[in-house]
Length: 239
Image 1 (spheres, helix red, strand yellow):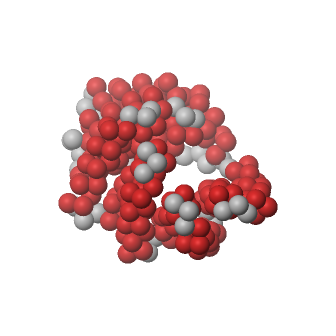
Image 2: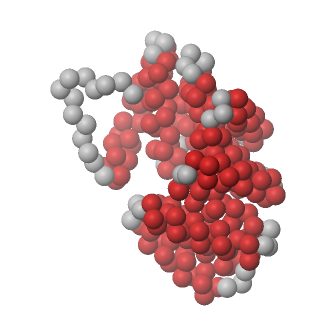
């Protein structure tokens, strides 16, 4: 990120105000990125796509998501291999949201290929997670998803990244539960919750409790499922 222009002071705001700002400036931001692409401001165009990603995801603006990362991939050709890996992964995620799964998997596999060539474990973790979500959440191929999430966990452990480990544990638990392997699933959920609470990641806790509710429901433990879902709702309301 380039240094701020003298006299510019970032304003610190909460998530609700940030989302309201993105709502108001959505079309301007899309136009700004396109201008950056047209002017060959490669890094700026890439960064604008990066900073709009969470907004597009949370507002389900998937066509915008797709547009910004098509632009992101185009400009990444003029940047480094890390940018190219991120662009392919982000575009793969965007294609999955509009249910274009062959394109999604092609871009995600390309991202993984780049990250492996660079021996970039961090990008490998994120891409294995993305591949797992497409195979499991979208294509219902839970065995393949489990393979990707297990590899993501192995790499996250090498990096000593607590949150990424927790995310992998959470997704492994969901895959195992879907495969009716409930006794194997629970320890992964419990470990995910421990690690996210230690990291102070309340958003991640909500996701884990959502999955723990589903696992309990699938196992026929309805009372426990209701308890987890209530905790999950409380956590999501805090976001």
